[in-house]
Length: 576
Image 1: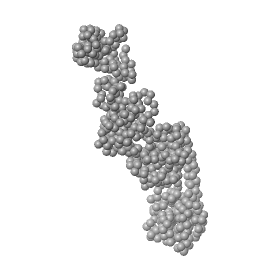
Image 2: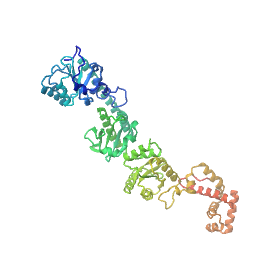
Image 3: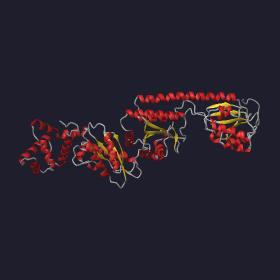
Image 4: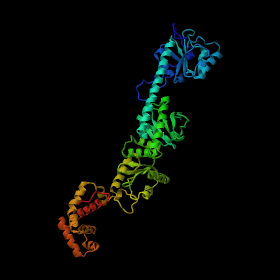
């Protein structure tokens, strides 16, 4: 039976019911309309949404019990005047009644409410027009005792019209959910088939859901973070502590003090990580079934991706962060610190230094070396980020206590590198105090790496103070201006030696190395002083210079040093 006629005064119950009633204006908004790019755009229809519908709003609804339960989903609407409606319900139904069958016996009223609450009904709506003009006090007390939603309508409402409208919304929502499920399935299938990187998969999950999504490993390190517009700092700050407070449920569901949606990432029954969907920027947790669907499809796509990508994802995450630090792509120092600490690298109160390893040509895969260095440096008390960086280098960011000297750490690193890569060059930047200065330390280490002359003996690693004239010229070996300078200064002498089989270039080198002391130079060249003088005169004629001039000797010495580094195997061809 549905209320359909008559009018009634606005008598919505006793004084107690009026004081506890929730005005409709405080109810949450209706579900978002289709078209938003989010898994939550068709949220389940809840009681607050139903009460805002014009067809029910016309009855001036007033909530007198269960004001905190307006987020209950409404899965169906049931009109009944039976005393035992619960026997026909399955849960989630909104029960509409005119109150005609309600008994006077308080125990029967309490049983009526208890059965509705026990079966999980969404709420009870009673029209105060036909039998009642104020809410039955026993009914209100029974609903309040169970915190069960009781809604009073002080004006006539066509219940049939209510069911038609709500049922159409529910069915439409289910159809939309099916379409969305297909869209999500198609999206992740496409990502999997084209071999998308795991970062892209997690980023797509964040985009589809409208919530930050984080993939972590078994030791609670945040390996990949899809943070949307919130930025990684707000998502990852204090990550390990917050993550450890969030238990892993047996199935995808909300968990922990922050209401994170959690699902396991497994392969052949073995868990190797978990995905976590955090509350959005407004603080709303991910609670809809579509959020769970997105998270589970992401887990499946990541499991497949793990089988096809050989680099450990922890290593990939370190490389990404190191590259972002080097290229200054982090939004703030706080974000950089949060990301580093989420990967298990404490940086607060630590000193930092960048080390570059140049494996040399044909070095091949370096993952094994990177893993070994991480373990060895960790055993020595240093935290480390390792990853490939521009310039064909392996970048190493060391974080160590201020009381710990960095040189023994770098020497240990160099020994470990050279055990498997004897030709590798290890270069060091300057020590810095903050992640924001990492780029400067990297730039210095890169300059040192460029200047490190191959074959330098007894040097486990190179630093800025090692850059002398020879190293500087080696760093500039690709500069055409340097090559032209060498050619202008020495080209004729080199040509003469090649045509006549002489050694005038070596004589000049011996003379300049002896700082212009002809006697010492002649002895080093195993020549008589007269023969040595004759060769020096020949050099002066060929080059048109005066070897007694300190300035000209300096010019020639620089040219000879440059000539020698240009002839090294890693440098360009020597001038002809």
